[in-house]
Image (cartoon, rainbow, N blue to C red):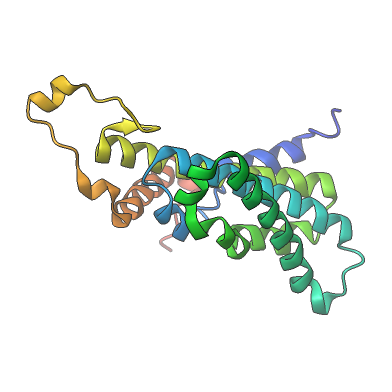
Amino acid sequence: MSALFSKKNREVLLTPLGLNNPVTVQVLGICSALAVTAQLEPAIVMGLSVTIITAFSNFVISLLRNTIPNRIRIIVQLVVVAALVTIVSEILKAFAYDVSVQLSVYVGLIITNCILMGRLEAFAMMNAPWESFLDGIGNGLGYAKILVIVAFFRELLGAGTLFGFQVIPQAVYDLGYLNNGLMLMPPMALIICACIIWYQRAKHKELQESNN
C-alpha cells in the first residue's frame, strides 16, 4: 500500500492541483472553462467527467503502450477516449439529463480536450498504469478545481444563486444591490481565470518567468 502512494506517486497526483495546474500553469482546457462555468452544477459535472475520462484513458493507454505501433498511436488514443466519452455521455443522459442538456456538445468535445490528449502523450505512453491513473486523476481534478472556482463567482455575482438556490438575501436587493449580468458572459470567465493565474504566480515565485 505504501508503494502505491509513494512520495513520487503523491507528487504525480497532487502537483496538478497547484504548481502544475493544467489550466493556470499549462494554459490548457481554457475553452471549456469559458463555456460551462456560468453555473456551478454543470461546471462540477464537467470537471468530474473530464477527471474520470482522463484517469481511465491514461490507465488503458498505459496498459497498451508497449503493443501500440507508433504510427497509429494517436488513432488508438482517440478510439479509447471516444469510447469513454460515449459511456460518460450516456450515463449523464440517463441520470442527469438536465445537466447533460446544459453541457450540450461540450461533453462530446472532451475527446479534443488538450489536457486529456496531452497527458496520454506526455505521461501514459511512458509510465506504468497506476502512475498514469493517478496522473489522470490529478490533472482532471486540477481542471475541475479551476472550473468550480470560476463558476462559483460567476453564478454568485451574476445571478445571486449557487446550484440554482438564492443565496443573496432579498434584503440586499431591497437596498439597491443588482446582479452583475456581465459575470454570466464568457469574457468574465477569462478575466477570473486571469486573476487566478496572477494570484498563483504571485504566491509561487518559481512559476514566474525569468526576466533575464
